[in-house]
Image (cartoon, rainbow, N blue to C red; front, side, top):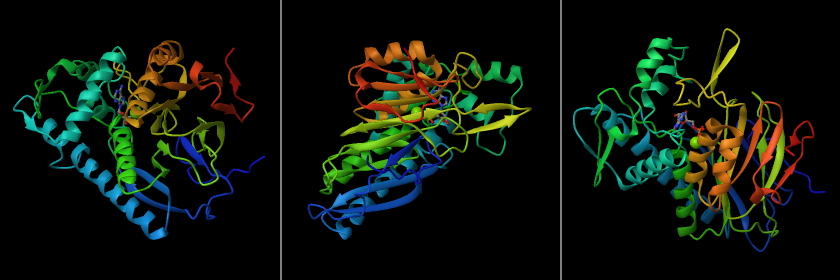
Length: 346
Ligand code: AMP
Ligand code: MG
């Protein structure tokens, strides 16, 4: 039995389970890691590089790329593409970067694929709830109803690199997808800088690539879907894939004993109450995993799994309130439940 170290990422939905190999030199590669606070979260990049210097250099370029994306897509950053689009809602179109355009297009694609569960034009509702912001509170039903009238993705118009929101009260929010894109881009940068294996973890959106020096696969832990828990429900083995989780224990506030979390169901205008507590998506790119983890959470385990089974190269682990673990057909061999208080679905 290998021993695993799980302490690192207790706050996030996903932990990187690192074998005892870590830190040793093997095949003259050295494990190099650097962390930074990016995109409002903890960013961690670890690579296996020929030297510490080369590893750190590649990691620095990757973090620079992530910051560039944050500057384009951060909603509250004055002058970002998203800020400008929202500030000009109902007025005029805004020229955006190719990155922002790509993420918006993917967002629109996922709105269609998820029957509207994933919606990047949910900004007015997200602002209203303000989960994690100073003004977070349970809004009045009238305010929720009012915001719900301004989430029609059809009012987001694209003309080349120009984006316009036609409804003056509608807002765009890429918080459910931009992190995934940033992970994919950071991996591209690492590879372009000669790194053959490593992982990028942005607050639980992970991509692991290449082989570790001991030739074992990456072991990634799915965090227990409980507030402030460091425990791991299951271990997932992967290679050249992303793994992204969404959960109701990540960002929330409590009012009169009720927990209100950050994944909003566009159909109700309230935090999603589908019976799901955590969704982990395993896919070829983190942007897909990011959008789908949020969407499957809202769709619930039945509809969500149906969608996952239809999609090529996408797998999921869905945990429901009663501690049942649903694993998609393609992931059965990759997932091992470690905590026996969680039971696999029949
Ligand atoms: P994630 O943590 O990836 O599940 O994404 C949650 C974030 O996505 C929230 O903090 C919001 O910014 C945004 N969001 C919440 N609900 C939705 C939704 N239904 N569709 C798209 N984005 C959402
Ligand atoms: Mg997401």
